[in-house]
Amino acid sequence: MGDNPCVPPTSLDDGAGAASAGAPDTAPDTAPDIAASARPAVRSRASRAGARAGARAGVRALAPDAVCAAATDLARAAAEQDADPGTVGAHLGAVADGERLVTHSFASLARGYRGWRWAVTVARAPRSRTVTVCEVVLLPGADAILPPPWVPWQDRIAPGDLGPADVLPYRTDDPGLVPGFTITDEADEDHQQVWELGLGRVRVLSIEGREAAADRWYLGDRGPTGEEALHATAPCSTCGYFLPIAGNLRRAFGVCANAWSPSDGRVVSVDHGCGAHSETDVEAAPAESPPAPILDETGAEAVALPPRES
Image 1 (cartoon, rainbow, N blue to C red):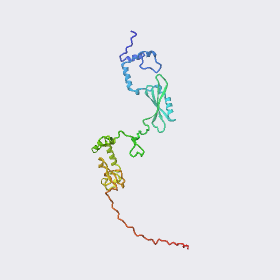
Image 2: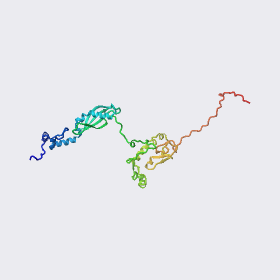
Image 3: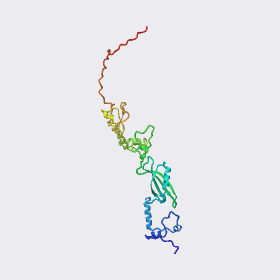
Image 4: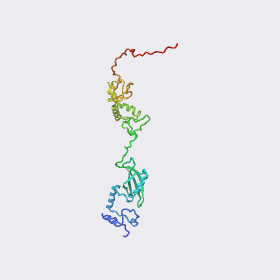
């Protein structure tokens, strides 16, 4: 009977009895007790439920390790090694990141880094009093001055920024384009089915892309609100140099083919206009004959010429 193994208790008060019997739930950081480690650990249902609750609470419920929290001088020396001289300020506190893992914070005194802090993470091995540095990093605080979020070049480039030698990256999800076999309009149905289905462009203008282009052109300087149109006496729709474009946009836009017009070779709206309209004219000013020449004899000055040499 003396060799039978111990039966785990099932009462709610057995956890305290097990602790008083010398069977601790966790091993201490000092030298291990061989006699205690040889005995089986006895944990009640209540203690197991408490352990699960503590695991769900996460690292926020952990108190900073005393040895790691006391290593302020070590953390400051590590921060001063990476920072510029004299830019590591006061100690702001220590936070537990895990078991025997603590992060010390120091104010940053560097110019241009107001509100930033040096974060130095230190740790130690189980049953060891030696603290080592894990990481040193400069982090922004709640009131830190931060640069604007970085935006890739292809996303921040605006119309008109592209130079002669620049090349835009390929956009697979361009909202202004659809696959070439997509039917975007009834007027283009036959054209797309016969020509663009594997025989022409890979992608064509979508409805959204066409509407965006129409709005951009109509509200630009070649629309009805442009300076030229405000002084024009007739719209481009009645000009002989107006070339309507293909598709449904022909009802609203065309290309100017007048070499005298400032809009030559550009897309103009049908209600745009300029002074070079083919069917307008201005009243010619009557020709004026020049006045008769006037001989000014009163202002003449007599000049004595030297005698000629014979």
